[in-house]
Image (cartoon, rainbow, N blue to C red; front, side, top):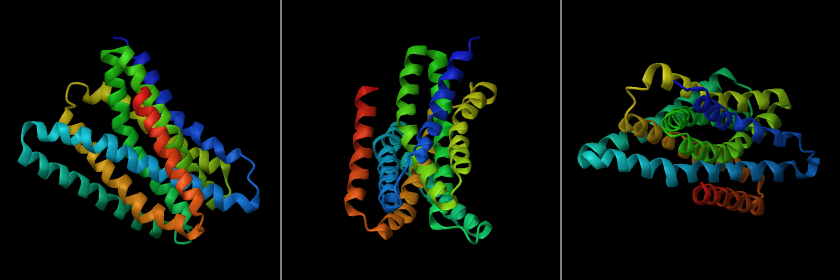
Length: 250
């Protein structure tokens, strides 16, 4: 069985988060650092909420409501709420472990965890798609790669400016992307014959709950502290444009 191609596609798509993390090597003047952080965090909000609203939630609801509307509604709401609860638990744990951590560091770690959850089912979907149809797998891999790059930015930028460590920032972005090929490998070794559309839909709704909660409760308040309204709107618009390009081109 040919698994090298599907695994390679999943790996490249997932680790493209590392490409996004390379923005930390840009030489930003000290007076423009808050502008840069505001833009990157705003881009992150647009990507996280945009993916959740335009892709994760509609696709999952379609699958869950298609068989049994009543049961589908209950499962959908429960999955989303579990995602919200999980990210609140993660927040508490991070604050306990890193008592002196800045808000930026916390945002970076939370983003990494959220995107790991996001990338894991993506890795499964990419691998299984490519395993069945290589052309479809390549198209899906390119689409995922495009939105993984700004995801890498959303992880690396806050961690870098919180710690001053480029190595730490790139490592966290890399770890997040690594969830995708890991998902692909597990899909082949363990779940290939057992994964259902219902299972994937539940995971994706949980991820949507995580990403929307982080965006609203953690990232947005941090952006407001910098009072860079123009950069906030510019970041949001840029994220929306990237999502539209991703949607219509791939």
